[in-house]
Amino acid sequence: MASTTPPGAANSFPKFGLPVCPANMFVFVREGTEPGRAFPLNRNIVRLGRSAQHADLVLSGDARLSRRHATIVQLARPGGRHYILIDEGSKNGVLVNNRRVDVHCLTPCDTIRIGGTVLEFVPEELLPVESDIVTLEPLSVPSDVDRSDFRKPGEVY
Image 1 (cartoon, rainbow, N blue to C red):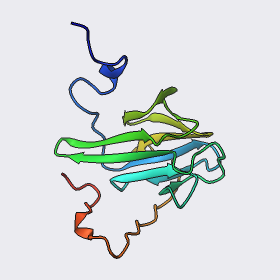
Image 2: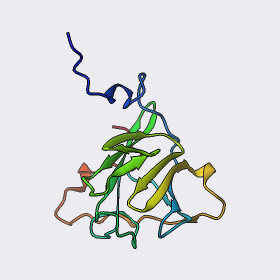
Image 3: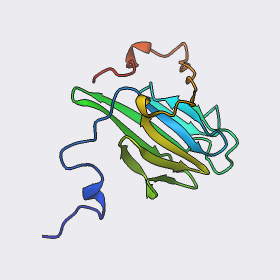
């Protein structure tokens, strides 16, 4: 019987589970319009792009970025934290370690290229000393939304 596994899918995630990451992970801007900036991944979902209306982590000035280019989803499990990078259908795509991806489970020190910006996925202890740490703005939730449905960052579910 022929295998139904798509080419490359067998290596999409490690055989024994997702890579485990430390709690304090950052996206550090290596190259682009804002080099040296570091953004903490302190939410369950962080949207990356060039528009403040469509992204939490805004990289303005990069015309090759989509308004909402990619999303990083944090999964907190009893065995540790996992971070999944998702291309949001961007025109110029997402590259991780020079390979184009639609969905990728990040591991510490992965290099991410979106548009003309090069990011590095790093734990806090590996941030360069001269990093400009940028706090993400709090999420705004419309007043008519039941807030009990929202999980706190790092909450196990």
